[in-house]
Image (cartoon, rainbow, N blue to C red; front, side):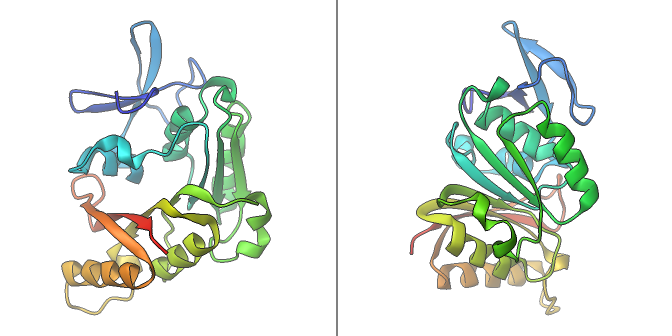
Length: 228
């Protein structure tokens, strides 16, 4: 068990279903010891891919259950649904709060539909760069922040969001796609190396850089901790 709700069986990742009997995106359902779990497809989830690829304790990528977290670039809700399983549980018995921000109205429709049966999930239509429009939903800083936005300037967006919303010693996860950044022609490894330097210069300790090859090519998940 990686947490009370997330388990690894062989090479398959599962989370305890907070909405019993319902599959969110066509994933398979399975009972373990009389409890229903949903298969977490890492090829459709950067967080799931990071959990599968990390060389450290996999549970370190998950936030504390029952806490408040911020997810920028929530998409259609694949990762969000599994994160909610862990963070909130059925009927939000754990009292978690998952603020999920996305710029696309279509994504917001899917997230809003998901939130109807998953209390604790807070869908937000907003630009990750424009905190003034939705920052009121986070009156206190959080200890876990995930960013997966398909916009240029991803690193700057991440740094500013963490400075505003992430506690010192909090965990910030940045999913970075090489093609979305300014390309220098020097190769992906050089680009990702420069990103790591930029994060360190702006007050982050980079605890791991996880290549998601095989699940999400040309992507790296930076696992950081805010140190100042």
